[in-house]
Image 1 (cartoon, rainbow, N blue to C red):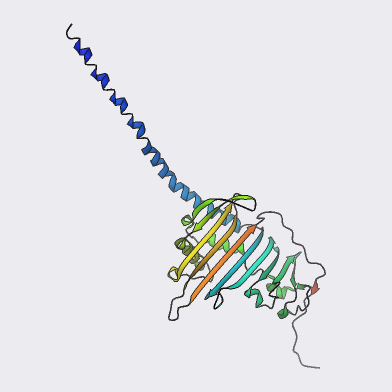
Image 2: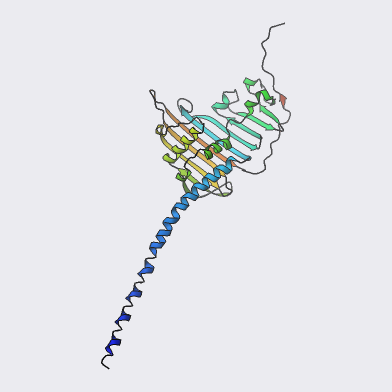
Length: 290
């Protein structure tokens, strides 16, 4: 009967401290941290994919409105202080379009610097708003432009073509960091910002695709960029700026800023011919006097 102390050996139950080893649940933070870090790389990958998909989708847009501004100085712009190189505001629908372009580039053609160069392509015809002195369009009126001079009415910049180059360039878009949500054109949007390293890679990729940009990142001292993607899957804003110095015996500073605003992507847009268009006078001839 004295052997009943064996039951007092119920200290085994006191070994219930093992349940107190429920620190195992407290160790669950470790699994939580693990899942968080596992989710971190897919998030970055999906953000890069979102930006890449938006580039490709926007490059393929056939209807859109654009408001573009380009300024620069030095090698890639005008000498001296930064100058307005190009502004363009217009609407595009397939092969048809209407736009107004200003800045130094259209000014070379003799367009009115205050009003800019106005052009329309509609119904298979191209039109230009005078006066444009170099073409003989001397009046403040619309002129029908013959096929032989159609180049003057072409847009000075093609946003889809540039975005298509960028989409094919192989630039590392995962280096662009997503920002907080924002509203643009009544849509929920998200921005993606690139620092100097990411933006330099973008510029070099565009240069290698054929644009007149510096292909050597060592020439770029400052750079920043931003894309805004909205929930319709399109890019609605592109901002790019960089500055640096050329290499060689006579280094020269340069700077470049680009801002593009896109809207009505994929929406129906109708381009109508201007009324009462005149025929553009032919170039002056200098034959022998009869």
